[in-house]
Length: 319
Length: 249
Image 1: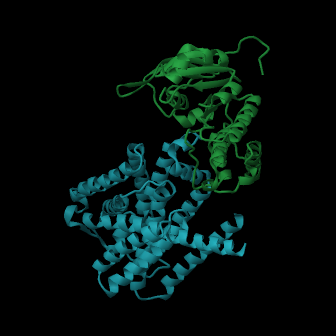
Image 2: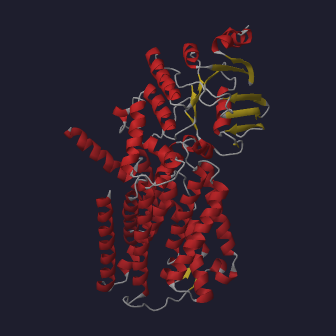
Image 3: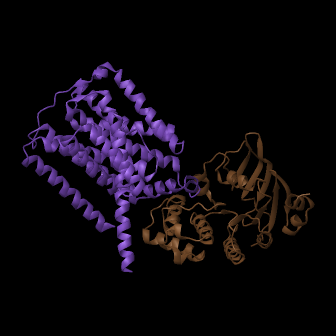
């Protein structure tokens, strides 16, 4: 357990050093562009699976949280010229609040009703932002990126590194939750909510907590996106594609372990980038759908489930 | 385990409890006191309201009228997990294990969440606690097995063990012997008697009459949501209305 912890933090440090080196060595903008999107999806997928995987409450509102993150940043930048760190922290706070409100209102409902409520949330918030003139309304808003600050030559490189930091943060949180009493409680309520409650698990409170953490991370992941694109508009910030992609990434990777959504986001995110560049952005939606169906049928526990099964078989055949 | 010093206040006081499902009255003005340390049998035909009463005691159902007092606290409005922490544990008629976990992990949930102190206890020590409960319930050899691999009788014992891990004052066993063979019934019954011997108050719902007779100090019979008889086991069995309820007229 402790050894695992040390290994994890060594890995995380190596990852961050590699990301930093990449910004210093590579001059071309495109790799940052592509990798940024994948990193963003890792954060979203890991955050999603805190509620969707550990607790088994399927959230279709990823795009709502993501979009709120985007627009928190837009608002703060336009109103106060707030720096990136402030934008992200504020977005996380707003996301936590939104998660708390959503959780309190909807998590008393079990199963599918929660999912439906999250879709409604997306629509409500998107409509509100569409009618908010200050941040550009339906037409969207153009933003001018500031210049890069040391040690980054370019602002996009900095955004890339910041998103890498968020990845480490998200994974560290998910990993902590999984191993702690919170994770055990969520797993229990996922298996059987009444039995969990009768074993002393405060199910509602844990679900709301998961929703708060998940929401905060999703919003934080969305905050740098406005600066990254130098543009924000409601229909792309609240695009349902985020919800579907993130759900697919988590399920394809596997939700029983924090590594699942990470693997899923890398595999699917990379495939999507590749397809968008080589064929078209329409095809990648098709591929996503096909992969999701394939995995649900063939490997319902995702890539992580496949790996576990393979390991078990190997140790079984040895014995 | 008879108390030498006069009458104690009851551990559980159910007063004028009524529960409706739409127009159907599942419990109709039920009042009963259960003494600390008592072995209490609850019988009645199918649909008579036994499990509904249990659900009202454990908090799974909200009641329309009446109160439930545990110790000296009114728990009528408390959610189930708080009642568990106060010391009410239960098993389920159809076993409800946490099926993605091993037997030990199932009990760990109880230890994590139902402990009154909330103080940090090292993992090794908590495993010792769990293992001693499993040894007591005869499940020690299954400790690291997935609950999916357990037999019916092992599942029943696991549920009782999980309930025990919450350190209950009151344990409610909801037909823990249904569908078991007669030797298995004896195993579970011996286990319940052993737990009662440790001072835990036990309410046992059961259809198997030999088990009820052997176990209970006092028996209550429900029919259509009403108490039709309460008293010493032999007395209740001999009651005309109880026999009618069971055999039909």
